[in-house]
Image (cartoon, rainbow, N blue to C red; front, side):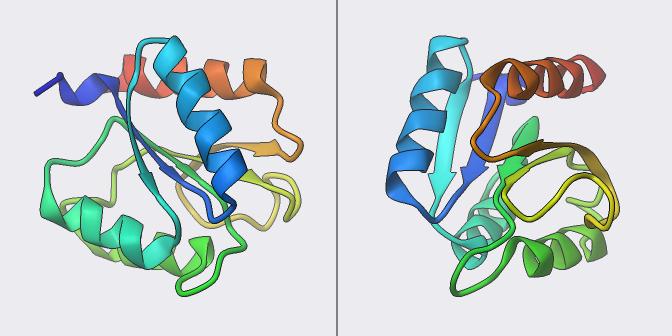
Length: 123
């Protein structure tokens, strides 16, 4: 198993976007896990050691990113997990507490890379 500091969980409901983000992150050398909605992500987070960072869309079916963040921040084992929001739902103002950064859609891959490098340096 790779070091936790290189693992990223991408939570995105649109398959094409999820695949693009995963391919980009893998090309940068990250170990990538994916989830199609917040509930799937929460199950992954509770089932193994947490990743170094979570890349999170906010507007998703089943369980939104907003609701997932509430669960993450209430869980002592997960509350310090760095999160980068990738969403068309606005900028960093009004986002859930504990967000490392926000990258609006369409995704600026350089900005996303910078946030991820910051997050993995902190771990």
